[in-house]
Length: 401
Image (cartoon, rainbow, N blue to C red; front, side, top):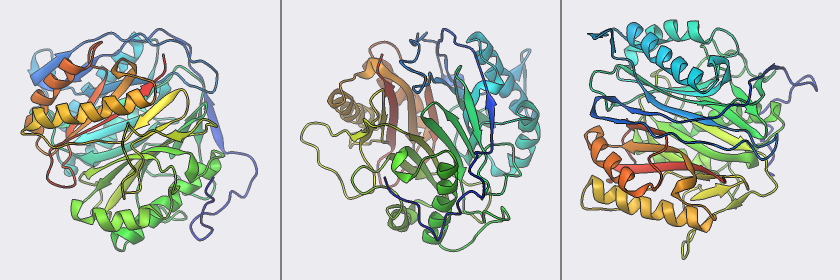
């Protein structure tokens, strides 16, 4: 495995991990996809218990909004944040879970100016041992929504990762949460590990600092960069993609870099140019998955990483005559990659759809509904512009049943 650059990572001063243990209880699970005013999908998905204590059961809850209450519209971000988190709580309770079982959150805001107000409400729901989180500005499919959230939860025991060399965040999120062999890493920005203050510079400088902070989280969890399986890169400007890649490839493994998606997402602090959110998993069965006839590209990412029980797929895209055509071609590539891993669309447990134009949401969802044989699994969908000229990118996670 790749070692952490000494210039960027400070080893913990204590051999013990500063962590808090939380526990849940095993449950039967279902999934509900909420996609705003334009579409509502409710497809129960029953997940089997994990094959071992090291393979956590993960529950995905996506595209949750709260735009009305008692028939009256909610017009402030505070009201909508509370309604959205209440809706999340209802979905968790339906699965025998609670807020304490959430390990990762993605918050999408229509306007970055709503960040502090959203946090004020959010903090009340996750006052202790909050999940990891990434927050970006995006165009939302529900035109009335000011905020949209997606969550990952688990009934299994979890561990809050508190790196001794990284200043605790002033915001309501944890740097890392570990469930079995899977580690969820919060969206990391270019912050000084000692002071939590922004570290400026160009995107290469910031990307290196971001990975330095990610390295501290991995180290505290007993992992390293070689355990990263999936990353999401949110760029303030997609024109920074090439320079970001130059620094990014210095940290990921050359032979089996994590699967990845890189899109434009408005960042909450204007000092930052890039935010990177990751998942890591320790596995002796780790390998790159290539569909038949495929060769690795020049970018520092794998089309998919399998860890034995799960397959983490990169954000994929393909040319088409319109959004529907792009979605069909992309799904063909994803399907072939799943097949190469010995899985199919019926094994998919989480889908992310990134759109340059969020008005294409309904068309893409219609294609997903046509292609997915057992109904559409939880889908996170937002207007997050792509790198390049195409308009549809789809990323998936699948698990062996």
